[in-house]
Length: 369
Ligand SMILES: Cc1cc2nc3c(=O)[nH]c(=O)nc-3n(C[C@H](O)[C@H](O)[C@H](O)COP(=O)(O)O)c2cc1C
Image (tube, rainbow, N blue to C red; front, side, top):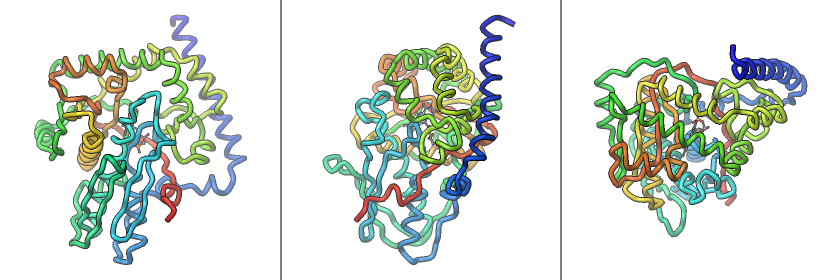
């Protein structure tokens, strides 16, 4: 065994041991509110009874199950007579990764798509309007007949499965269904070419992961949103909880030390391995960088992820090539995207589910009226 491999193995063993000690320690110190938290609670079925209030609260709960960068949950919801508004929460933006707040609008688009699908399922005809000048999305809700379907059923179980997949391909007819998935105006999808596609994307994942590692503010931002153990995950109900990616849970000081010591190339190799273990990948692009296009791109990603989930496929982002400017422009010019702007790089395939990512309760995302 090489000296580096031996050191990495020792570090991992120490982490695993500390993880076991830490779990024991925290189990003893857990208070009632911690031990009572059930990650399935936000995912319980929606009330279909026509009494308005619980139904609307249920809709917001389903909206918050959407994906969001670093699980920051950068949204707030206002309840109006026969309407809901989704507002950005700028205190939860990711300025290092997305100085121009692109991710914020992509996130709101994801939440909007969940909300629209759920609203139709519980007998509303939702009518969304996005006004850039007001910086919010308004959804008017009129009564209708319920329209359930596989995308609605997939909302509670869908997750970003951020681990290695089993390498199996998906059936050819599923690829053609994916290509026919309804999109939004000015939004496109570009499945990776069957032969060379993943190799080219792997190169971009490698380059961009190394650049992000070398970027101090990106690293600080990531550490801010990492939740290294059960106690801090449950205290915040947001952020990237180690257990969701199969990493041992440890005290914060140890997790921070490990992140500081991590070799950038080892992280890049791990992400490339995740890509190569996937059946394939798809890039979602938009015609422009207008906020409305970002919202629409978020909607399309979410629709795609739910469609995959409904077929027992797993999906996850590897968005570094979209986040690092210089790699983003290479991605744009060399994978046949033309002038369309890449917004998401999504890999998909088959894998076992990971533990649930946590969510804040609806009370914490409502704008008081
Ligand atoms: C705009 C955007 C960018 C994201 N980028 C990444 C990424 O680069 N890598 C990753 O593993 N997850 C990424 N995610 C996924 C989030 O980390 C994930 O949605 C969040 O942790 C909640 O987990 P869940 O989707 O399983 O509920 C991204 C999500 C969004 C909406």
